[in-house]
Image 1 (cartoon, rainbow, N blue to C red):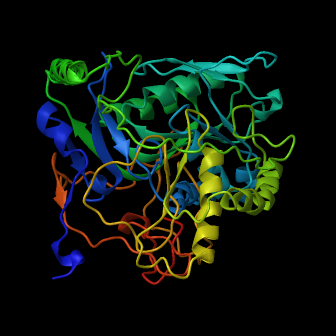
Image 2 (cartoon, one colour):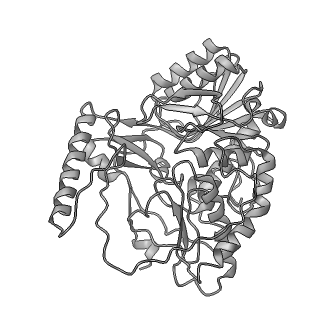
Image 3 (spheres, rainbow, N blue to C red):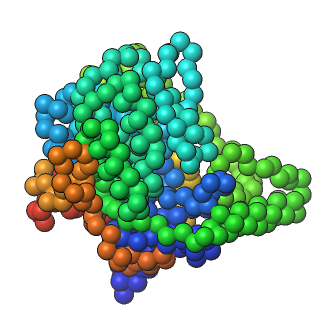
Amino acid sequence: MTMEETERVVWTGEWVAGRLGVSLSGGNELPELLGLALRRNPKRAHLLVSNVLGKHVPQRPGVVHGAGIGLGRRVRKLLGDEAAARSVVLGYAETATGLGHSVADGLALAPYLHSTRRPVAGVAQVGGFEEEHSHATSHLLLPEDRALLAGDGPLVLVDDEFSTGRTVLNTIKALHAHFPRERYVVVALVDMRSDADRSHLEKFAAELGARVDLIALAAGGVRLPEDVLTRGQELVAAHEAGVAQELGAAPGSTSAPMGGEQNAAGAPAASAGRDADVVRVDLGWPAGLPDGGRHGFTPAHRAQLEAELPGMATRIARRLDGARRILVLGNEELMYAPLRIAEALDALVAGDSTDAAAAGDGIEAGAVPSRRGTASRPPRPEARVSSSPPPPGRRCSPSTTPATRYGPGCPSPRTTIPPTGRGSGTPTTSRPVPTRSAASTPSWPSWIRTATSPNCTPPTVC
């Protein structure tokens, strides 16, 4: 019996769902896109963890960047090239900084900016808004060029997921007062709003007198029991007590409280072993090229980065001493640059390898150590990172699924993928082990292959 026939993959949200009573509703693609984590936050007990964001779960850089690229191409198709060239893409800190930049790459014609929670000396604040449910609610907008937000073209707002839509409403309301425009496009990996939240956005758009389009890979909902916050607090407390007791039993160990909002997953004490050598590599990052979108990133910057990436990846590869299992780790707002470097590094590792097919080695990337699971590693060197671009593929016919539209002159709202109730709170799926050929085509989840042509190579316009 082969691995493909016997492997059972457990949904990454199963542990939290069973203990908090949380469940997801929607299409069968949701368990592929989302897991659940426990959250230390008095306002929310759970966290929706994306499997394709590269933020909490390490993932192939081509998959991460490919998700954003595909969404960006859908935005460009929706707007048309003339309006797309006048648009601005805005990503939300910290989680969607890399995703928003990837969407801007797919749109290709527009500059990119992401919000930040940190004031920067010498850079004036142009705008800001509130994220009500967050641990740190205030977002600042600090473009180096104030004119970046002053145009009247469409504003494309990118977040990893929509739970209520309040953050988007707060953003549009705050910016519209200073930089009014006729059209907004909201983009996310998943849309998890309730019917009431959807109606609220429709009413808001009508009152504003602007059109709001919504594009997402999938739509669904989250069912929460009334006592979910109490359950979550009790579970966090029990978990931390157990970790403290475990650490206290270890000779010479101390227990340090974890500050701020974090996922409640205690880290085991470091095991004894040889110290790793720390090597600093001069990337040769071009002077004047931003390392992200905090102060703005233009199409000209994008072209410069594309030209420099192969050289930077080569400088890193020379210091790897033949290593084949590599994690590229991003941090906080610095997600996009590690993502792109990981993709370029992945191409080098794949191109240089002729004998690693049986070794199961690879490059990974993310913001935390790799999750535990039963899936096998792809049978060739590869890279996983917080974000990164897919290899060029044939452009397929666009999906027939329309974006959701709100506002004057728009038809009734339609979700990208209507909730069908087919999902379950604790789904368990059986699927083949992801594989990659010796060519550079990554293993793309089935939900990315949503173009009308079944023979198309991802990424597609979907």
